[in-house]
Image (cartoon, rainbow, N blue to C red; front, side):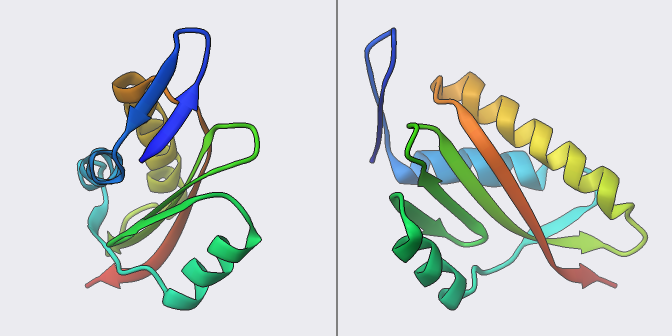
Length: 118
């Protein structure tokens, strides 16, 4: 459960709802074939370095010290996709979708391209 307190009041959002919002936003972007499994070592390091960590297939969400969200995405792109344009599109769409649906500010979206669909 992610709980953020702001000028409106207290906002609580379940981790499964938040990750599903992110996964649907990512999968609707041009050039994304699928989301990949999150590396176990990377998720352990993120959990140790700070913040609360939520991990689902391809999506890691944690809160930072300022109360915003940091989202890590592991994706598979289709062959021939302009990766730079796809990553830019994904970061903007995820940022907008999460803030629109939950009212929680997204501070950072990290996109890792782990695989390519031939």
